Length: 279
Image 1 (cartoon, rainbow, N blue to C red):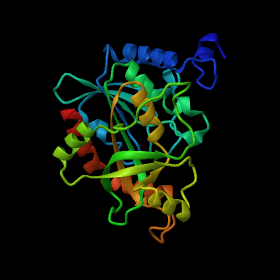
Image 2 (image 1 turned 90 degrees about the vertical axis):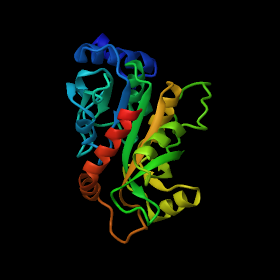
Image 3 (image 1 turned 90 degrees about the horizontal axis):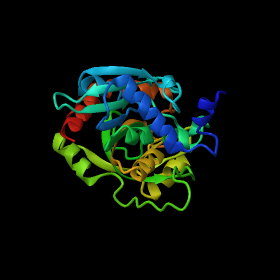
């Protein structure tokens, strides 16, 4: 490993993760030709068309060309980030086609690196999306749900040291109101992040429901915490891709997630594009 590469190794405890984010933002500025981006989007399963519907893609960067980022590890995700014009507003969106999941074993710093890079690139708002299991039977596959709050069951936090960050209104009430102006039918729920990569058991889903959860998945909460630490305003949206374990008698599969995401892609893309234009 070269000295430069070593300084960007997020798994090394001596590495400053915020310095790596600054280095990543510098590459993004160089490759896109703009000094700052305004809104960042993390596209989970089912949300891939959003970047196309927001506006024209003005630059595309391979994740592996940017310090601290890696290849896409999940089928259906893109290993690229894009700089996208937000309609004709003159603003730019930094669109991530994938994320690092906690279950990949690269550590929490890698999981939240995209969020910290977005802040370093000038973003003031981040939209975090995911595909998830639905705990409430009335939310059929293909239903988008605003995240009102979350429960973090990973037993980890991206915040290091005695840095006590308030999460009371982590998922911005203002941005949720904007989303509901675009689609008044949008409901809200509490997202529960498990570690993964295995799906939750029926007993774990019952536990999640008992403690107040409406949605279960393997991402988002850690990213949202890091976003708050970095001063970003957060909008979280889940796409219910399947009933959670025990809600339906059908066995769970990643193919089901992909199929539901493809079926809802156009609706989700239009929704999010309209929201981003109003932010």
